[in-house]
Image: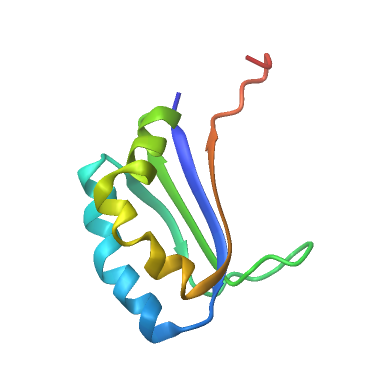
Length: 99
């Protein structure tokens, strides 16, 4: 079952966030992640979403967590956290049977 990393946030310091963008792709690729969505100016339809939407796909939820907990990502995660406000979550595929 695929695992997805879904992030939705606003960039509060573009210069600091640029350093994150320079480094994050290599960490994702090293862990088999595929970038499915990278929208820096999404349009709100309902609720109050942030402007940036990122969706990464990994082979499994376990693989997504392995990327998130990896030393290479842990070394740069502060560049996202320090320069943006919002959330990041890890989710698995939905099953119509509930399993």
